[in-house]
Amino acid sequence: LEQTNALPAERVYYVALGEGVSADNVRKYDLTRPMPAVQTVVQLAVLIAMYMGCSPIYLLGLDHDWLAHGGTALNFYSKEDPKDQPAGNLPGWQYHSMMEAVLTMWKVYELQRLMAEQAGIRIVNCTRGGFLDVFERGNYEETAHRLRDRAGGCVGCDGRGTPVPPGHQGG
Image (cartoon, rainbow, N blue to C red; front, top):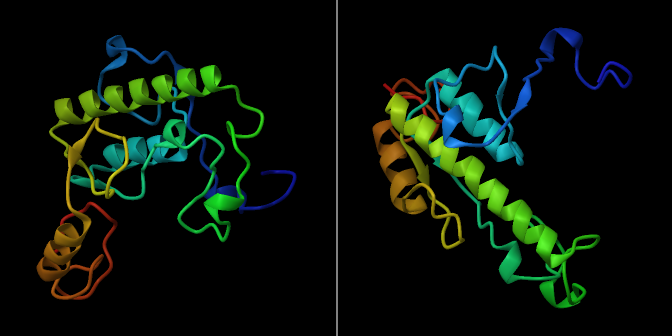
């Protein structure tokens, strides 16, 4: 970041990640100290949301179903057609390596669920379908309507129309 000046230095923060992923590391999350390793930006975002005191934390778009769709590496915003994807595994990955990576990813999510439970934080996966079964499941449409109604018609706003961070209580 320093070389590219992608962000002003005063807006750059670092998190020390790398502790092992195990139930022995379940403790109060503190981003000012070394934290258990993560494998995805979502897992880092969950840690940040917990550190900020957000509850509930809603997860969207986490299908995590790569192992069931060998050769397909599409996102919700992809313009590619799955039929045009090559058969087989994701480029550069052997299936065995993919299984190990997903298992480690699940262990991180399970650790985060334990951390959240100890702190009384709810994490709700509102993704339709998908394989991520570690967290409580919620319905996206029902959740969005409930949040909109509670916020006075503006999802992401308090009752006075003031934006609030996702997961925080509105007015």
